[in-house]
Image (cartoon, rainbow over all chains, first blue to last red; front, side):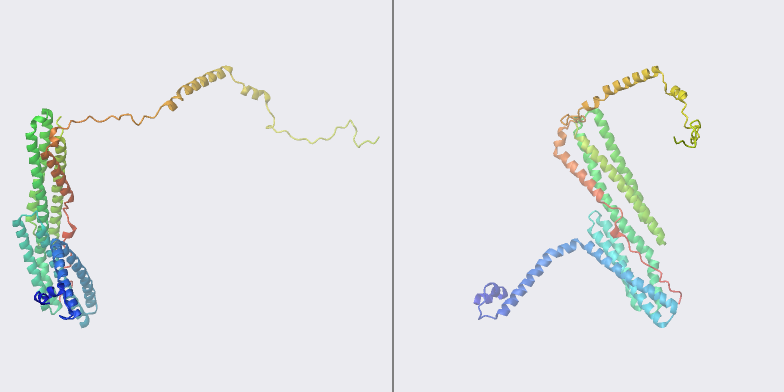
Length: 298
Length: 129
């Protein structure tokens, strides 16, 4: 009894309490509390790391939910605007103002959520160099700050003219926001491609070294063929490098006052990215062929 | 003796059926048409004999063709000699790395749908107040 008391609630629970030391309810309450603690620790231990690991997925899910909210707000706004433009009544004007404010807030929130997805993707990227990651994260932070300030302006909107002015602020900044987001996407993809190119080059070097080490195992005729294949693999890499240089050049000038031009430029970059990937794929199939061929010492 | 109104000398009236030209068989002409030269018959018989002989000579060939036994060794391509290089750990490591790179390239997407920026409506569309 004295020992159990000294051990606190655990001692009391686990040591066995006599009916004289407290009521049965108290004992069950203590057990319940302990169970809650255990469950909480269990939850933290198992689910918290998972949450961190899937942060980009969570951010994406939140973005999708926000997209639905925005679509609804946009539809409501359009209905209210049409009614106002048709009837020009004070009531319709007030409704239009409310719906405009809701839509503007939702629009900025949607863009914020999207930037959050990009930021998480950058965090998870293992291929990107820390300096590049820092560069793109700075761009995203600046845009996030701009959007937060923009949301803050919603409170000051008192008329439709105010709403127009606030909306205009985002409209005039949107091209910069767009170019920054596209640059980040291209940066992510380029990092992935460059990481694969590093592996590609490593394999090319290994194949070359392997061939040089075992040169005596092959006939002269065969060696000529294998050397030529190595040259072709190197050529594919050179073509890949040309494409990546083009992408870097295009990505650095992905700035324009026109949203259409930015999208067109991004489409060109996407095409270049697929071409670069194609060169790497072809080169890899050559490496595969060469590696298979190396085992035959005829 | 009761006699009829007609005398025996009087000929009995017979219905006259006019014979058309179609019903008349020109015997002499048809016999001429069906007559054939025996030499032709002889040549035909020879031809039939030749064809028949040929057919009997050829026909039995197809049933006698036996199906190829399943255990017949099929021609294999020229076997390449695998050198001792293939057993080296460095070589095996190389093949694994190549397969890994190939898989990574296949998994890479140049356009990721999750990264597509949202489409937002920018102008509010109110006339100047």
